[in-house]
Amino acid sequence: MAFNVRNRISVALGHGANERNLNDINLLVVHHSGNPTQGAHLTSAMLENWWATGARNAMGAPNNLRGGYHEVVTHNGDVDINMQDRRQTWGASGQNWNTWHICVVGQHLGNTSNISANQLESLAQRLANKMRDLSWSANKVTNIVRHREVRNQSTSCNDIDIVALRNRVRAILGGSPVQTPTPPQTVPTNGTLRVGQTVRVRDGARWIDTNTVVPTFVIIRDNVINSITGDRIVISFNNIVLGAVRRADIIGQTSPQNITVGARVRVNNTANTWATGQQIPDWVRGQTYTVSQVNNANTQALLSGVNSWIRLQDVTLL
Image (cartoon, rainbow, N blue to C red; front, side, top):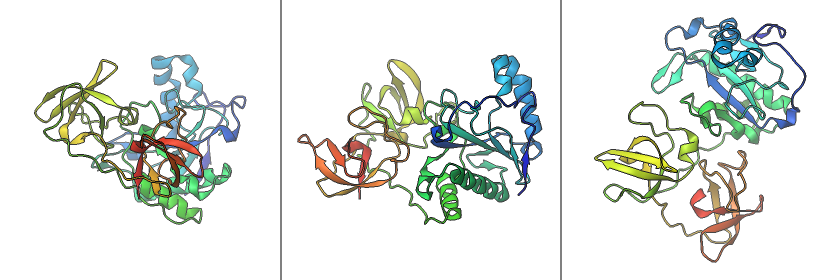
């Protein structure tokens, strides 16, 4: 694996004044270039040309100085370092002020992949290096996410095994592997669904009509069933139809959990806000805590360590 620091005064990736402190960065975002046939031949220079020409024409002249990624892992596992960490790229719409971006050349979607094990190892090494740069401990590997997992994104990028990637980064940093969170048990919903019912969509579900992954921002919130036709369930949000998913991808009300003071619970990866409405930090999701209080309605728990109230539907009893 070789590192190539590209020309920072090039047309597409030109440098500029520092825009943020390194401690503003709290997510490391993994992309793929999405090239199913010629991904092995794609280079940073070709990506740079897009930001200098195609992106400029499509999105406006200011974009031509940004590029989408701080670093790119090329087809042979080498790494092109394109942008200074203190500069914002335009890699995740509306979420670039706090994110750092790395792209792997090739496609990794569904059962289709031309990203090599060599590239994935380079990716893990660079992510570990960036965590060192940011003075992050190995426990913060949960802040490594795929593009589609960044808040408010509408993309299927990508299906890289994020748990395996995090474990590899953690090992490089000298930490022990993390465990795959156990999904919450749900009440079977086949035959009980009805129009107007509020439901959630299973993580990893795909839209029937496009076969693309349902975005995270749809999964983490309550949606309403708009229509039911056999296995086809159309959902909406705020009276806007979002699309159709299969019946098996609908999650009904979570099973009652006998959560009491002293119980150990894991915060679900789909948890979005605390019971008080504040945003749950990314590093909290997937972590285990002890319950120090349960409210009288048995709907919320106070988690020790973070001293915050969370809805019982957003945790899994261990």
